[in-house]
Image (cartoon, rainbow, N blue to C red; front, side, top):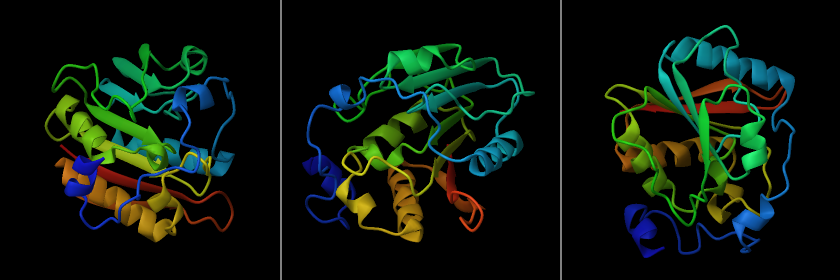
Length: 210
């Protein structure tokens, strides 16, 4: 934990503690075949992916589940899924292959450097206890110029979200994600409000480039 605080000296001790300090693998053992954002937010995310992701590219879907929200008409050469539940990943029809790994205990990705054309992390960033290390790994596996898109809403499992995330509003959370990406080495970091929450779940995307 000391390494994390050194890389994020702005944050107080205990910033990455969780209310539920139990084994994450146990918490995510039951498959949850549900969506974590509503239909309007999902459509907004899919539209953003359509405009941003390279057709025919290799994607890394980090902290994925049984759905990736990718545009159905766009083909990708490979979609590599990561998650915490093998059943959920197996049920995702967009994944070419997948792996189960607890990034809070092992933040190193089992992928070769510069092999992916984009990385996605949808409604999962709030659970990372080693965010800079994880996104530094994402940077390593991306090709030059490739985007990393981190999207989030106001929904989460509160007992598993880190303390600093729970203490912030959406603007603060966007700034926090931007800080994660900056310290990991990403460039051209931009925040976009995909849904403001007035008529659906709010949804914000923070994008950085390799």
